[in-house]
Length: 197
Image 1 (cartoon, helix red, strand yellow):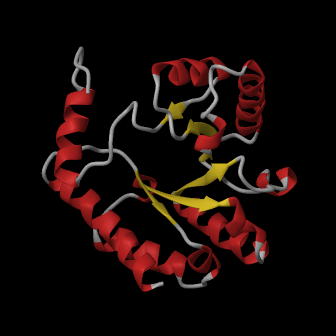
Image 2 (cartoon, rainbow, N blue to C red; image 1 turned 135 degrees about the vertical axis):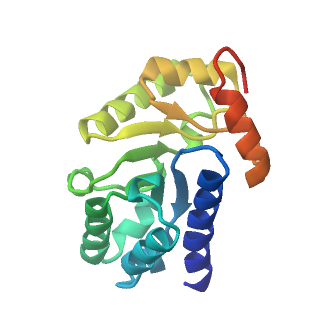
């Protein structure tokens, strides 16, 4: 819990710093552990961090895993619903590696479903995998969520996920991990008209 609380505050502090220094204005995602997800204090901590750093709730995205939802999902659903009501974005991370109950997923106010990198690993060499990917993307869209492909490393994979209808991607093809200052420079270059990141 102490580490999770530090991450919440650090993400909000970084967003505030970018805003005060004309940095990138985009949501930042943090992971919520199962312990945080089931704690009655997590929503309160997130609200206080947003208020302390004068941030709109939609700039924070909380990522959760399928496994976290499987334990005591009643409390988890209540906490996630409260965060969504406040405007915090919610994403289901590593989709495709667990055993999600689709009926329960339909009850969650998810902004995004993030497809696990294992679904990308054999693209585009195996057409059947591309068909499965397209079906999963369709499910995500039916649930009203944008679909993000994780672990995209090649232009061929990028083309395959685009064909499948993915809305966004992340992975080494886009950028390698980097510090906050380096990211701010990268984001400005990426946003500049006619310039590649």
